[in-house]
Length: 420
Image (cartoon, rainbow, N blue to C red; front, side, top):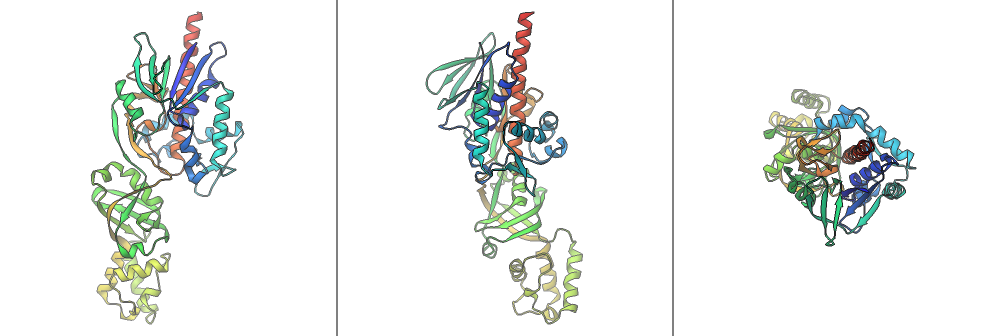
């Protein structure tokens, strides 16, 4: 009997195994085994989204969807044309799991429990006859001269297979990357992608817990710029705008050793001239009001007080007493507060890295290696990473589905050729 071996018991590996099993013709039986080196399957699914599992994102146009991937955008457009979030929603619905869409586009199971997704995948795999093996890592892969592979397992056993899928997750541990490299693939070095910034400013840390709905954060010296919500924390700054900036700037910021100047524009919809004009208008309209008690909307009062202090405006200063120099300094703070980033803090809810198998070495119509026939890839082992919001799981479902269907099709073609 033909055999497919899948290295990695995460989202991509499971989805590939199920897709392969469900697509294999009855006349061409194939044994499918998922090899997981850990003590449980789908660990990342379990803890993602705070235990709710952000399954995917409600973005149903392939090009728009692909734009959420700092690495892999162009390559994924074709893949998403074949399997995208609408297909993910339909697949889970057909397997008994209904998803809901939240205001920001993230999609979760209606149960708000990742266990629902795990139970669904385990049930589907077992119903399809997939063999699930825990505590069986793969230490070495050897290509057979006539096609196929021999795997040396962590248990000391060997396992032969006709098709091999590497879906072992990100490259931080190096296991999957080492296997891919041993089979001739180039590996982009892994670096963190989604992370928050450490900032030592005392006044900022006093604002811990404060969120601002719309700011522009930038690293001007490197041309990095993103817009969105920001959160002040006990260690610095976080929130979607910072995570996006860290994702698109992952390699650049790594090269800077995570030490760089960050600029925050607190009023991104207005020019500096417009802000200066608003401040001048306050002087005329509210001359007796304390400057630090009258924020420009929509800036929160706590933040406004901190920014006026940073601009050198004394707490007792009224608008009629605001010197021109102080007004310009305040306008500068509002349009470009400069913060010195001194390091990073891992966003533990996402723990995403960029890096992995070079995309040009993989055929995304089949997820098969262009270098080693019979070898396929899926998930984060590839040099693909998305921003927060369900995009990384969608890449796992898509690449896993394509790989699984492709491996099934390869066996069907071989069977038909033999019968003929």
